[in-house]
Length: 132
Image (cartoon, rainbow, N blue to C red; front, side, top):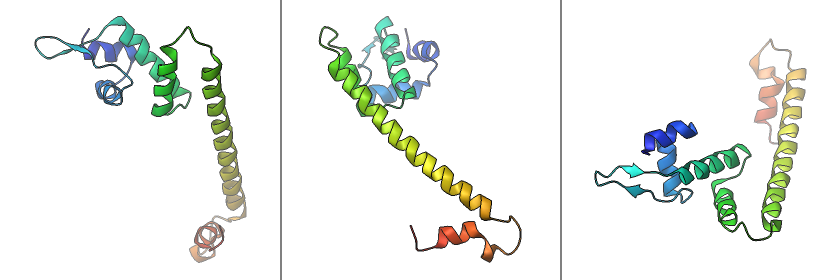
């Protein structure tokens, strides 16, 4: 199949496929005599794997690692579980940080009357303050 069909079947942009190829997440496809890329059924599965991993928050480097691990399906799953656990810790840290940001914004919004001189705005003053 050509790149356009692969893109349609996986619901991605053609440029995304080319980018993933440059990043080594998708193998370089065979080329027809005309120069068109020629993809196979396994390319669909691999591209879907990449998309699902991206949806779970894995970076391209992490996806590359997951793909390398998935190429050795006869090996123990411990290493793959460790990668997923590390990602979960990272997500928990980011959630805590986002929660802290939300709480800070909520406090600023609560103390701001929403009218009056901008110079007296607690949001502006908090952003302009030397305190971190």
